[in-house]
Amino acid sequence: MKYHNPVLLQQSVDALAIKEGGVYVDVTFGGGGHSREILKRLGSKGKLFAFDQDPDALVNIIEDERFVLIPENFRYISRFLRFNGVRKVDGVLADLGVSSHQFDEAERGFSTRFDGDLDMRMNQKSKTSAKEVINTYSEEKLAEILFQYGELRNSRNIAKTIVEERAKEKIETSFQLKSVLKKYLPNAKEHKILAQIFQAVRIEVNEELEALKEFLTQMPNLLKDEGRLSVISYHSLEDRLVKRFISSGLFSGELEKDVFGNTDEPLKKVGKLIVPSSEEIKINNRSRSAKLRIATLKSNKQ
Image (tube, rainbow, N blue to C red; front, side, top):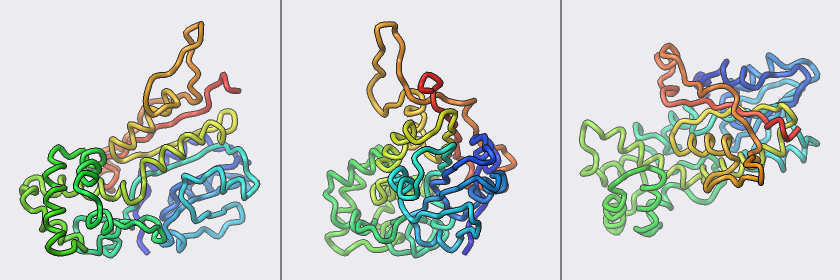
């Protein structure tokens, strides 16, 4: 099963500042590229836990006594680490979004390039698929998703067309959805607009932003002193949440100050934003929108 090159591999693993005997977590195992790089740098007493809710990823399991793969969504990171006797870790790596493998399997329905069943579930056991979203959500709810998660200005018109067309015939495949929305897809922008529509539906199906928020809020209690968080995101919605949480520990609103004007954000950023080199983008087109942010526990928590 083909999994593509991991994005920002060296930089994201360097960001963890790996200690030989440390405990690390790769919360988006996928093809196992980041995990293998972490294991290379871990000593014999180190431990690596990986999470992936997609059963397809299980075929990439690494035979190594230092490695444990947990087949769950990373929003439950603390709970499942506790099941494994772990309360604190030295570093956590997250490579967000959809794996190249998921995009390339037509029947998973993630890609605008292939005709496949409108599925888009990262966890194939979950109940809601893209088909349910497209065929059962109200016009208002569809418009809201397309606007919020796809950042589409004409989300109301697109939602109205979907509702009108599904009344004639159930919309079940990627190409059916594409043909229903043809009038919104001018040739020059077809790929971009379709990608935004698919992104919006996918985020809804997988509760991606809720899962990311739940994951991030667990970091301050999960990381050891000097523990590192390394997060690669691929679109502005994810990146804004990550950036905001690292700088303030919040997703909205303002930080409260104490009587001396000090704030109490739990994390602090490490270094600057890292993006792929032009060489990496040439080799791996998927990396073009990637952004890596790094954080550690703030020293006043130590």
